[in-house]
Length: 173
Image 1 (tube, helix red, strand yellow):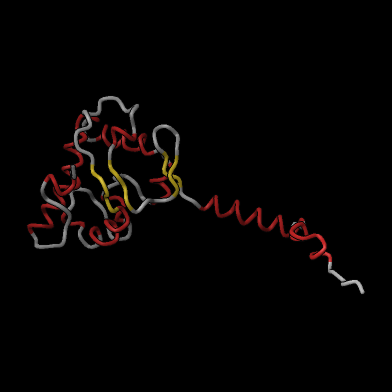
Image 2: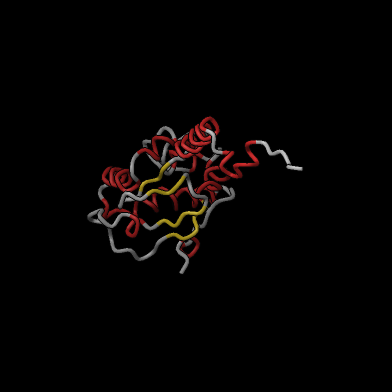
């Protein structure tokens, strides 16, 4: 005779679209989207979360920032997360920036006290303020060398595992 179908089978995929299930799924999607941290660029675009591999090129990322020197040497393939987890912990004495192991992001993001604080402000605005405190955007190279290279050299002198201490170590052609 006739096969008896339940209401879900007879409606196919539409049987799954009941208001309660849809509401739960919509809430879950919005919640997960809201959990993402935004890293804002100068043009208003955003990257989701903190990327593991970052190319450091302020001139390309923040074209509206006035006074930056000509872009001659960017840093490609900077391992952001690994740097914080592997190199900064326990090595604050080698850095010119003041930070502690509880929040070592402040070694490279001066004046910040949390990841949310770092990601709340667009990258170019935050860096503009940092460079203003360092004597202006024309001092970009000096600022990065004081923060990054000096720490690498100090750690190298102490026979600690560190990042590059020569130009071609950071500035790959």
